Image (tube, rainbow, N blue to C red):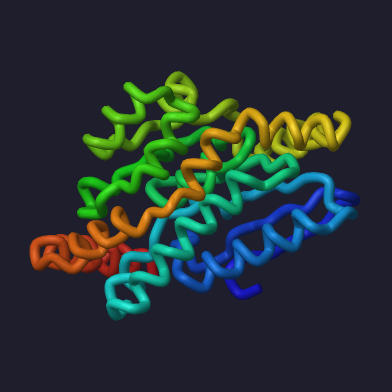
Length: 258
């Protein structure tokens, strides 16, 4: 895999996102993650999964620099596959815990909220969904996933204003479940996923799927109409202009770091 590393400890698999400084999500990562999760789900030797990033970043979300240059066909396929990945993660039968190692806005947040439990490193990090300010129309599947944890009222308000939460705010809102120091992050994630793995796997898995039945049903629904609207807005001149400005800022920050 080019976009993440996997490590195995007994029946526990850790997926560590590893793409550049901020683990920005491109089409390759989406396809690799989806394939990996499907393989792990069918592997009887795997009992649980931890999804994590690197120091300072879980994932900065969609790689706008790369996605901006996708042609219309590539853009459509990217979003089709990204929404499919969302469903694959949310419907994963086995325990999966997100060890959020740093910033986790937008697409990074979506990866995290597909998991069963979220432990986040303490620090000056942010997490949340800011698609609307970026110019991306929020599909109802994302709202359904967000509101599964936050409740509809809070999810609606946060989405419509593109709210990004500090770590303490995320815990208070119920977006994350636990805060720990960065050096204890993986230990906390291992402790949680191990506790899940000690329970009867059939009982745990079937209960998870029952409790998520309505959610996963909505995630699997045909989103063609929404996707068409998303893509129309993605290619709108005002959106492209806004994206160009954001990309210039990202490139200048990268230059400053290097």
